[in-house]
Length: 229
Image 1: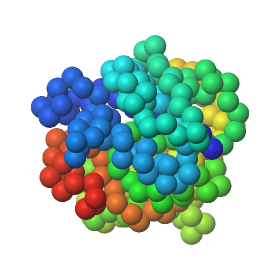
Image 2: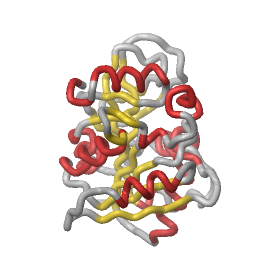
Image 3: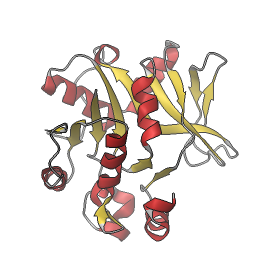
């Protein structure tokens, strides 16, 4: 199964920590953060990798070229001509690959263990991996019904414990074929459409979760170390 890795974001909130670099390759424990993402994908037996890039694409390409030799690994780079958002990155990549079939999609700036990726790969598509958290304020709470379908993702700002999106999706190309190859957001365009159709399953994941999108979270993972998450 293909894993489409979204690593084209500008990372503007991290300028104070990483300057103009691509956040997915920010140094953590002496290695690019993306190394740990690829490591967990491999543990989930997901080695058909598609890097969806835009900002500082050359850094991702250099990282991909430096991966150790693995006869089971396949690496493809799809560079966006302009910034297309999380949803547009997927429709653009799938059109360029001329691929038809199941895949998972994930953010390159979030640390999860292999169970999250297995949950996405094993779920009946379309699926959103969700994880429990003590305070949903930063992310927006995910509401799930008795049939384990996502019925709502609340706006950010609601405090308290609950489920949030882990930024990992189990998908099939047929669910994206209606969307154009154009700037799109997974969170604002594609996911709401799937929720409205009551087709989006929730795949529960309870392992480590941390994104490095803010200076505080990047400092946290650097100070704590990946092995202690």
